Figure 1 (cartoon, rainbow, N blue to C red):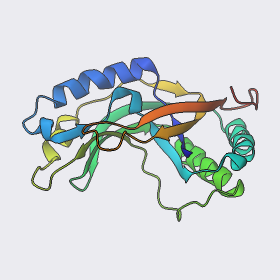
Figure 2: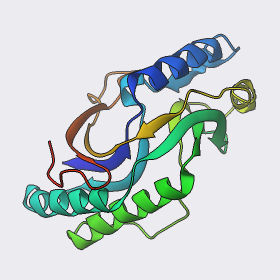
Figure 3: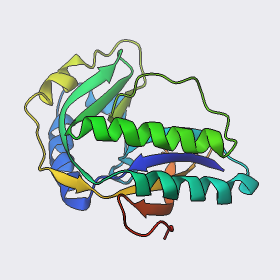
Length: 194
C-alpha cells in the first residue's frame, strides 16, 4: 500500500484555509488548476511509497517511538508558495524546527523498518492546494493572493500514518483518497497507535 507520514490540520485551521481557497478560485484561470480537495490537505513529513504489509508492524512501532520522542509544537498555516509553475501551496510558521525534526524522525523510522527512502533533501513544510495542468498558466497570481493569509495557531499533537488510494483510472478530475491508518500522540503520552 502507498503510505506517508503526515501532520493533519485540525478542522478549524482547515475551515480558515477553505475560506481563503474559495477566494483563490475566483482568480482568472482558476478553473484550469486541479484543486486539492479539503480532505486531502496535509503536511507530508515522509513519503514511503509502496510498503509491503509485512513491514507495517515494524513501521508502526518505529513511528510510535518517533512520536513519543517529540514534543507537541505550535503551527499555523500561512501565506503561499509554489514549486515552479506546477504547484500552489500554503506554508506554515511556528515550530518549524520541531516539524523538521519530526519529519527527520519519520523518515528514519521508514528507513529502519526497511522502506526504501529517496535521498534526503531539505524539508519544506507545505500543504498542496492546486496543481497546474497546463504549460501556459502562470500561478504567481494565486501565490500573491495568499500573501496576507495567516491562520489561527494550533498545537500539533500527533503524527499520522496515511494511506493514499490512487484515483480511479480514466476518470477525469478524480483525486486520490486518503485514509489515516494510525496516529500517535507526540510527547510522553502513550506509545501505542490508535
